Amino acid sequence: MSYIDIAKKRCAQLQCSEHVTILSIETSCDETAAAIVRDGRVVLSNSVYTQIPLHRKFGGVVPELASRNHVDQIAIVVEQALEDANLCYADIDAIAVTYGPGLVGALLVGVSFAKALALALNIQLIGTHHLMGHIAANYLTYPDLEPPFCCLIASGGHSDIVEVKDYVTFERLGGTRDDAAGEAFDKVARILGLPYPGGPELEKLAKQGDPKAIKFHSSFNESDGYDMSFSGIKTAVINHVHNHPQVSKADVAASFQYSVNTILSDKAVHAAKHTLALAGGVSANRNLRDMLQRKCDKKGLRFCCPDFLYCTDNASMIGSAGYYLLKAGRISDLNLNAVPYLEL
Ligand SMILES: Nc1ncnc2c1ncn2[C@@H]1O[C@H](COP(=O)(O)OP(=O)(O)OP(=O)(O)O)[C@@H](O)[C@H]1O
Ligand SMILES: [Mg+2]
Image 1: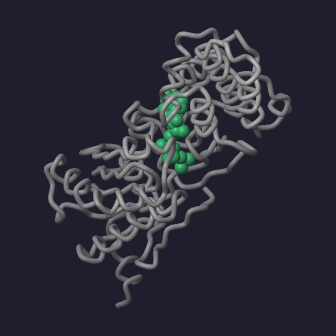
Image 2: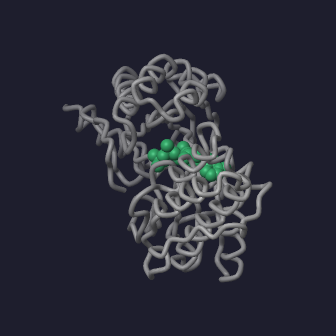
């Protein structure tokens, strides 16, 4: 019997079984992460090693350093996830791994490790989309949340408004035409002299500023539809800081944050019919969460956002998404490869 025949048989067995325990692995950028997730919703362990201190001195992620650091950490992080869950390899039914989008060298470490483990343990491999994982972070926080719903993904590399039709089917309604929201936060933070990653630092500084002090405007975002642009706002901030060297940095941070979050929330709330979920690293931004909650309340929508633990990259979200891929029969074989640009 070929590997794929064995895999199909194994997948059919897992689809019928009452409980499925997944070991999940995430190495798409600068976090080496592993988790154990049961039945797509219950996190038994969540182990994350962050490389932020390594990249901070360069002001951003250095891809080659990220890959090498993943190689050093991956086995340790996986062992930690098993130990924290009080399980051994024999208890694992399947392995879910992020295979894209992300940095190719970084993705390859997780994919190669997962393939080797799946072969050695003779268990099912599930290649999982990173953004599907960010969306699934909401399933870990809200046990009753089920598709269909609308989701705003705002992360370091993506800003999309997506209709989640079922657990594995998505329709992109619109999104950024240029910088991602997190990328814009990071770049503006850098202009203000804040360390990497800039998003959380900028949020801290913004608390001391006046969000209405400076109007950072971009006419593109006033058009109908769900497309957005953040690079014009970023340029407006650069020009303002350049032309007003004495300006309050806290006012700049607060005004920029207000501008970006207003665009994200207006567009997403407009797109949502009954439920709006938030996903991706920028979902950790309290100002955005509060703004979305207020606007959803006003429109009579349910609003969901992940626990802070599951906002930025982690493997629990990959374990949840991987479970639903398995249930849908969307399994992988040992030809799985890293795909740096991968559509949802
Ligand atoms: N509190 C916050 N406020 C604003 N931005 C934040 C906050 N916390 C994290 N971020 C931003 O989130 C991003 C990191 O999110 P995430 O880990 O999802 O990105 P990524 O995995 O690099 O990108 P992607 O998920 O698109 O591949 C960074 O740009 C960071 O600045
Ligand atoms: Mg991410």
